Length: 175
Image (tube, rainbow, N blue to C red; front, side, top):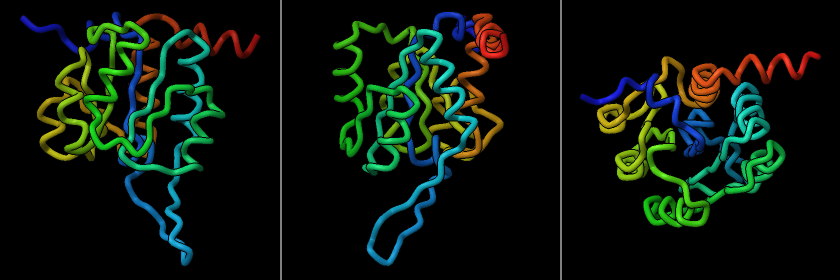
């Protein structure tokens, strides 16, 4: 019998996120100079920072490449940022080998076909509510939140609450 996603959350130590469609709404604004602009949700940023401050590993693996996104993630404390990735499975394997992370300790949030094969290799594959049907079919949890609107916050907060670290973090910030 397979575990309920809430039970799996007890073992999560690592969050891996796609960017476009997960940490953004998947839209790009194209400037006259050809620059692609993205919007990121401040609540996702707060949760990512809280996770890192509580000892979780946070990694981003994205097919897209944008210096603004990279800088935003660095400012939040993310050090493992893989952008412009053509084969996410190879990058995923490289990442877990470097840190000796077991797949049973990983939550991966993706939204589209390039995430499919990595999601099949982790304990907790999750996606935003507006992910494509193929991704929803392999997700053990579908967030009620759309990509770019706090879906990352949703899953980080749930894991940290399950492990009794969310309010502990919040209380430490208030004291």
